[in-house]
Length: 157
Image 1: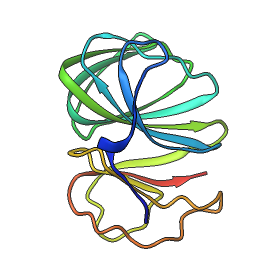
Image 2: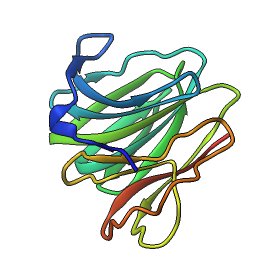
Image 3: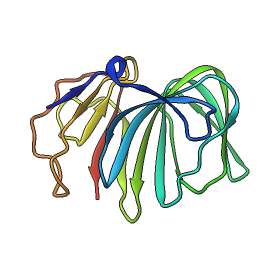
């Protein structure tokens, strides 16, 4: 199973220039990245995509289309790429982003992952990812020996 090291992924500015991210994977169906949110401000808009935002480290208040959500490590929130989203981090926040092109969907969860298969597993402590992304028929590679709190992308449909 390929390993993508967070430290080796190029840092990129957000579309709106208000933050930075490191892209770990992208194909025609979905994208996986780890963002650092250090200052308050709006998120970039991604028309035609659905997003799942998982806090890896820290605490952040997200306002999505006027509704506030206080998220801590391990908590997640899904929203459309068209939504008006702004963030107020309490200190530096690291977050895993899974974006899928509509009508596709991603099943994402946070927790331990000792014995099941997944498309991607991200360690929020390091930002490293383990990927099993063959084709649109789903993953078929070996299990990843990661035990601890991880972000798991179990399925892209």
